[in-house]
Length: 184
Image 1 (spheres, rainbow, N blue to C red):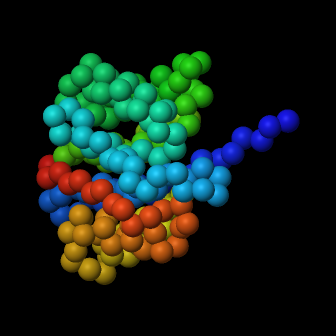
Image 2 (tube, helix red, strand yellow):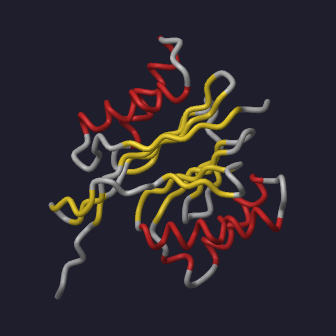
């Protein structure tokens, strides 16, 4: 009987602070105990750069989900929460989609949302959300930095990702961070 080797990949963090929202991720992909790649880009710009998406989990699955999200966002222009809800519903109920193993953070000028394959669409109360193997470490660091510094959202994401990389063996120091202006 063959045993499925678990692929670990990533830390994705988003912070909404002041008049900006930032999302960043590391570049490491690990298969079993081997690092396969150190510079994977896990943050994508969609809809002419108006929406940023970060993913953790299977890369092929994430790309399939991002394509579907972009279609939903075009079906519901200007309504990112509705597009996310429709994608999450499809993800949970569609026979092919429900097998996809990934999580996504979707960020726009107005919204930060976490999407899961269980049909969840979650808006974090404090504007801070992390996913992936180092997501909890990065999120804890970001919460402390928001409370005790005057750093920008991009600076907080960068510092928190570095802290997560110090703790989580599946997270590295190659970070891509994108930022958008916020609207209330």
